[in-house]
Length: 126
Image 1 (cartoon, rainbow, N blue to C red):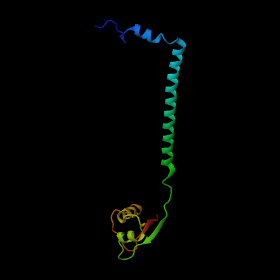
Image 2: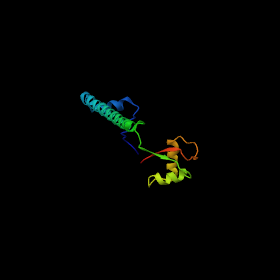
Image 3: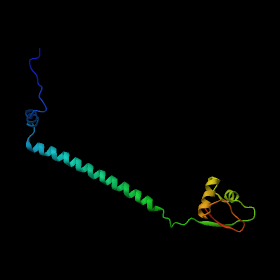
Image 4: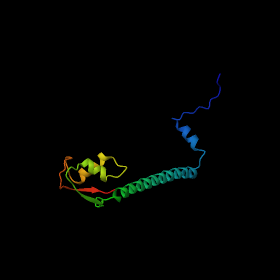
């Protein structure tokens, strides 16, 4: 049989008054002020991190501009030359031939792989 209980309802104002009566008004004010200062510090720190991350991304975006010129080599197409043959001869060693052909076509505004003797192709040098 239960004779004594220490249960207090959290919905009862007496419980809130009893819990807070242990703290003096100045101590409560300091506790609230510390809580708000921690929140403010966290918000300022988070804002600084976001700004720094954003600025770093902006620097990366503007680091390379479309005005940067890639050195080009001019090649005159001879009789019997193909884009594949030219690409194999001039591409970097570690680059796929098909990728270099795409670069040649984009650089020279070619819609097809057809080239003729006497055409002048600009090949980017990597």
